[in-house]
Length: 291
Image: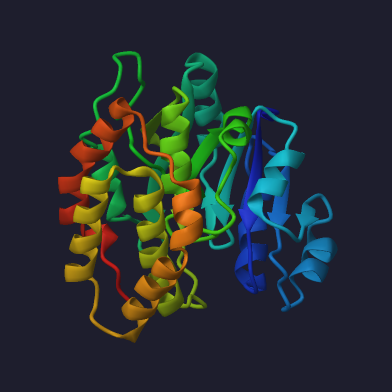
């Protein structure tokens, strides 16, 4: 069962062993998708290892936006070097995107390995409070998780892709609302699966700093002043009180000039979807800034 509709873009950085495992899994998929690996200037021999063991894979050094520009299929699926798509899930997501032309993203259920349990974020996706049209094949989402999502490539490019300043750590939220502002819908599909085996080579402290900073940037780039201030104060009250959080707030504040320059408040209907998500976000066990 080959399926020519979806290209997989794998983001990798200095995790050669995990990446090679992921590529073995992707090579075994019945869809046989083309794969692009974004090496992100890895220095651990990733490029040589990919060329030696997986010559069928295309390796790029810059970021995901450039990779999507190189994609020739109508859909693109992201995954990290420590995650892989389950057989049939890429085809299932492509079927949904084929069937619903106003759908931009399909996010799959995330299974954490080797335990084989659902990621805590799955419950939040499954029970999303965002209202959606009747034709939507699953719950409407206000955002998505890049490493568990298949996107319409043209919609991704038209919305500008991931903002280059946000890089990693909640960068999907900004792209998600920009897609929504252009009239696209996002959904969760419980019958599709991606497996995630968290790498031990994760800098949790750096990820927390980026997550806090990027949340603040997104909030002031797109939310009206009142909701933006409320979310900022909520973060200030709930993040760990240490130098990492302080540095993240300082980095966010230092970027105020370009944030003001690029600030574009969401249309009212998209902002309304953001508001209905706020309570779920505050109560979410998967959105705590730890590390």
